[in-house]
Length: 78
Image 1 (spheres, rainbow, N blue to C red):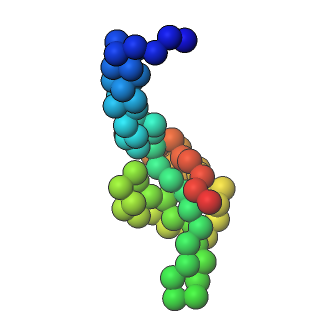
Image 2 (tube, rainbow, N blue to C red; image 1 turned 135 degrees about the vertical axis):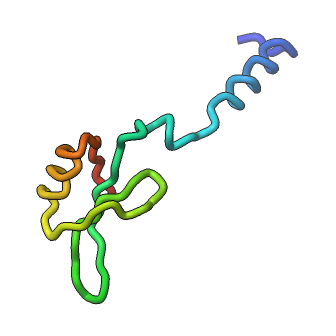
């Protein structure tokens, strides 16, 4: 590929357009299921994309079911 001012400008424009945005990667109705601990007790939390805890349960499968029952798309967080 030949390098010139025009192709370099196009390359720089493309890189600027690739800025990472979590809202573009996950729909607004996405939630995140994560194991958490508080006061020595472990639980599964359901969190929105900003990290706000929406619900808590003691069972991972139940967390996914709760999310789906409320029209959310659950994603596992490690």
